[in-house]
Length: 484
Image (cartoon, rainbow, N blue to C red):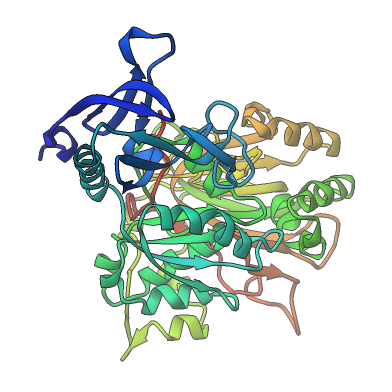
């Protein structure tokens, strides 16, 4: 199908742009102008899809609302949405601003004609009806103010119809996505940290119409502590993709301990992670256990071969929670059944502890300034595993300094590889402690290992059986920034 932008008639005529005489052109998906008569000054351009919000006509004047580097015209303050929630990692100086380009045409008719042409092109781009979920409690509790001060002016300028709802409790976003009438919306956007987006995906996958529901485009505007998902989207800007599974990261050991136990310092914002990380390195914990995995092509030599492992069905997938039972109807599972994998055909390998940290995910960034999985891709159909083996605490500190650009994975203390399926068999903390640590999925505790309670337990972790993950490629679609 031909791009509607290329089919639209091109316009070109003289105008005064922000008070200066110019030759303006609207062609395809770009608005460009250059000084009239070959005067001094560079050609300016705005890409309609990524830099123009909307326009309105006032007599001979056409006011074009922009969101571009420098504002694209008369700019306002930098937006918190410029990148990564804090102005890191974008183009130029990393800041985009709301702005306005004023085009004064030669007649009222010319202004109307150009206004109609721009609006017609914008109408064919992007969503026009959004459901927005705001988490007012994440990060520095800034979700509500980010929505009011940064998101709302943009969607109003773009003429987008929206419904906004704030989350009230844990898993509320999952409940919302599970019951939402998706026929009313073109997409769902979360103003939150990564965990709320994961809740939305899981809520969609629990629906009876999950195969249709999961096709609804999803987006995230960073308002959490680490904001690794948003940073990963910026890292992949301009690349079309979908995501491979309904979690972005599962972690155990050092990183999980820091992520969860630092909650008591939430008032510090993202600095709580660095502060508590230093405390944990000084008092470094090491954990026993085993990781079993089916390696991706090219990683077949990692670890040791495993002749046979118990079938996952024998261990049981359900943990017996109310959440699981809510997705059963007359004994039949409702919603997404999970990837179809024949375990008998898989060649498993293993790595045994002690471990300092185990990180599994399919996004590159764990936070805005920590690249945990430099080779991770959203839709390659694999999970990336980064495992820090037992090593001296000061070497661990050195590895953490190298995590900014992902160089830490080159250390001999780190095993980095891709997998199609993986199983975590957690053990107790090294040193005789009866504690088994935390397993954390996107900021939420899914298991705590406090050791046997009231006698010898069949499994060390409180949730029961080991955790097994497998990957379903291209499961959901995410709104992504476009690169210029």
